[in-house]
Image (cartoon, rainbow, N blue to C red; front, side, top):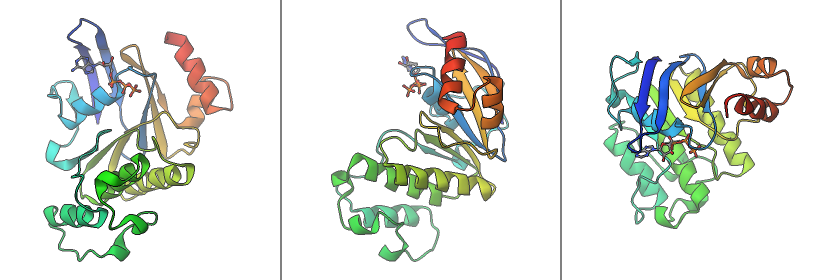
Length: 226
Ligand SMILES: Nc1ncnc2c1ncn2[C@@H]1O[C@H](COP(=O)(O)OP(=O)(O)OP(=O)(O)O)[C@@H](O)[C@H]1O
């Protein structure tokens, strides 16, 4: 999957993307990094076709029916319980699986009968990530999946995303909490001032910025064009 020579201006005239080129690895979890307002979420909107996706600039991405997208917002009914929400999605997906409370992931069984609207922000995010991970798609997009999660749950969310990729699914996520993303199974793409400024593994990012700390590497990269 690649984006080639993509430019886009915002309605107020700001140049959000300026001849942007990006290469996404199929066999790694792609992590879009970059400062607030750089355009990470909007890029996921284009990839997912929430925003119309120009075919000449977006090459090798699956059709929207083959994409699952975890938006930052909350897509489920406030009045349905967690268990009903899972059951409903499984029924729509036509998986023909029997789904019981015991099938809910750790951390959600105790709120199985709580209404979705009454969950905490982090619990809502956990439900969304778990449900999305159960869908059968070619490409999964996650927008700041660890945001608002406690460290244990954040690790679990990242673990699920990593597992999807290990099962052969393509994954692109955005993140501001990448300190624990250190293995070669990740492909970092640093977006800033309209272009992808760096692409490579965490180890390559550290080497590029001559440091042994990913946050330092991020700040140094940000300082180069910011
Ligand atoms: N349809 C739109 N109309 C006007 N401005 C828009 C539109 N879509 C995006 N923007 C602007 O584009 C910029 C990039 O937004 P985006 O949400 O993609 O950034 P981001 O990198 O995901 O930021 P963050 O890390 O803070 O979530 C913002 O300044 C936003 O206001």
